[in-house]
Image (tube, rainbow, N blue to C red; front, top):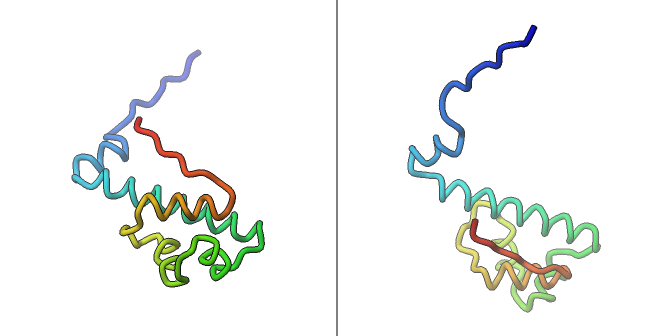
Length: 96
């Protein structure tokens, strides 16, 4: 005897966000949080302080704090790329 699959009720979360008109904003914020978490982990694994990373990036500690703030959306791609390079990584973006 086969079990009957329950039909999905409602829309997906992505569809909900699109219907609310906030999909792009929420997605961008989530991506920023992931990048910040990855940078934080790499800093810890390499024993880098914020001051040391800022020096490697040739920027101020205040600018690095803005970069590492998941709520701050004013970070440029260039800054993200410099941060990745400073921890020995590359930043990769793709359109899907």
